[in-house]
Image: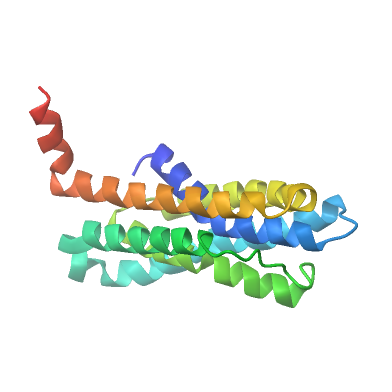
Length: 194
């Protein structure tokens, strides 16, 4: 899997955490830089750790399902993407009650990084370097969430829904790309245009 694909996956995965960061920013009255760093560290840290956990889980089953790995990646990414699109259609803009409490941040970070664990499982099947991928995912999430806290504080719910829509579309597209590459569909389509 190329670096561009991993970066796109990172952006897609980070959208849930971005949406939570925007909600957190809305809830913080006197925003300080350390508030943004704290939220971004929780979100980015868990987004980096969960793919590793998923990869470790997936690597144990790799030999049994290697023939179907591209279908698993397609289904997981498609499911996550559709879930994000569905959440974006909800009318209400959720606010985080105490966005700086460690307990709240821990729960939010786990909730927004479960999808990253599922992606980590697919990385095991696709022979993707997990450490560099996890680092990229974590860093991109950190930056996006730091920005999200400030955008939420200034602009409110507008960015939350758009971020979830963008993330869903990116993840679904990558799922189709992986499926096309592994089933030879890309080659068939390219040969049609020669």
